[in-house]
Length: 348
Image (tube, rainbow, N blue to C red; front, side):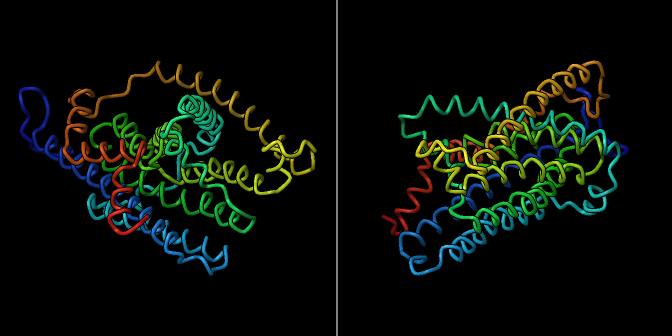
């Protein structure tokens, strides 16, 4: 908190509002960089595939190279830019402290998972309304995650359970959330969650990723550490990774496609796992409802006199945020910009 600051008649500190606008501007620029970097990765890999660069290469080697390129453009480049923009000095010592209420937070994992899973199911139902339109393919780019074989599935599992939680938690619950916390914990949690959802860059993942991001943000603030959220994020992704691992088995794939009705051990494991996930979702939703009702009983002390509506207004009116949202709208739907760039660079 600033000392000896001038307070305007509306009750807000001018220097703090200036700092807030600057942070919002930088967050918008960070999102623009994320979409530009993601678009560049998409175009480069598409050009490489169309030119036959991977044609004579072993499938597993080609998958590793594509994974490395994706890691560079989706994590390294945008996260370095975010760190340079927001300058999180001393953040590691702050966010990696020993968490408080660790066991209580871990006990809320079913609620977090249940809410996210439920939202994911609702999103799938909505996207199915567009099955016969050109939008459906862009809505369901998440299907491209399905690995071709066991080796690719293991690589993807490591990426989901180890790499993504470590990088994304430091990035979104660390850099982004902490840069916004001086302007209100609630606002910081919701904005960082929304940005987390937007950076998944497709309709299928946006809604449940935003819910997941909000839940993880709440836990990061409550436990005063991102160690808890990193563990929970790994658990959440691990369940998706196990599902993807199971469907790489031929018998499970044939069962899902209706080619075979034989309930092999692999198929039984898949069905049991699906049943457990559904039960976890039901229990989690009930826990989440109970938790939300309990939260309403408490009044959180204000950290800043500026209204929440005005904070959202300032954030959404930054020109970098507007550009980022326009890029998001294109990425979520017809992807005109990447396609135009692909053709411009000689793609067919």
